[in-house]
Image 1 (spheres, each protein chain N blue to C red):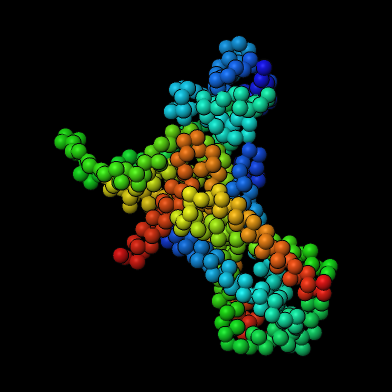
Image 2: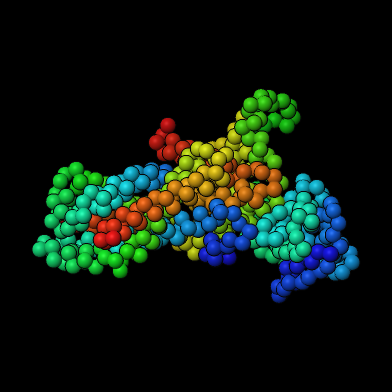
Length: 236
Length: 114
Length: 124
């Protein structure tokens, strides 16, 4: 039996509730949450979808660290497992947090290929060498789970801060050889709420379940943004 | 989301790094001169005669400029990391720039009047 | 969330400690800079009497603890700042973990050495 201490929130008050879950080898925290929902308390609310670390829905704080519930084995966590919603997000109910702002920020950096020759009537193939792919490949692995944002000290104190995930997405497209929208994105990234607010605590890279290295992406994006701003300032 | 161009931010970021690097050298030198050359280095006469030498005067003026910038730009960065600071961004920028200039000018006044 | 978000360490790595300590030492050093400039105003008394009386207070055994703490702030801020600048320029990002450990060791060694110098200056 493993004790699950869950941080509940019903819209008005926040409290801890404990459940005993019969854990067996191979059981994930997400399975344990489903066990609780099915056997003890059907009102327990959490977000989950794919159960295999692809969709990024089930990021939550498990024993103080943000992780994907579906990829965390219960037996690696000891006899007590503490489950809380992510920090830096507004809690809606129990383990469910408000992601609207997070997705707004992702949208704001235009995370899609921007081409001057967009022509949907006559689409044309865009070629890319493996080297060009490697320039940004690791940053495409982001599943938008919000783990990085939840530990970012800049995001903790500044609601409008773009955050590691959005800036990683921005860099991912800026570093893509097929993309022609760098200038637009540098301008977005250089807003006062953008790259300048990162002070490299690097906790985002520590917690990323996909090892995307958001801290690195933000540094690269900032360097490119700074030089692009200075170039345009000097009229080069 | 605001996307107004700010030339201050990239320049401040680059200078914060450059001044940081220069300070590692200059402050080590400053500490070395005042604490490791002789036991008398902090006596009034010693300080005055040191500051009278042009190379030391230039070094201290440079150090003063660099430290004041780094300190108040750092404060600016901390303040702008908060919601309240960001709401009053223009004020924060203006006040920290003013404080930097005041500290620099006051230091220069001291440097050239002793 | 408020500024308390800079002081959450439960479940966090050493990187978060480094970030917070960098911030705190930065503020301490800013205050010290202001104090230092104010202190140097005593040089304006050209007889040197005011300055010497202040030096007698600050270069003393009772003041040593403040000197040592100040040196800790300065050395940590400088050494850790250098690490951050390296990464911000895009250097050695892949080695960020060993680099953090090495730089903390460097900071402690430099701190102890500089503290020893201050200790011997006050007649140790």
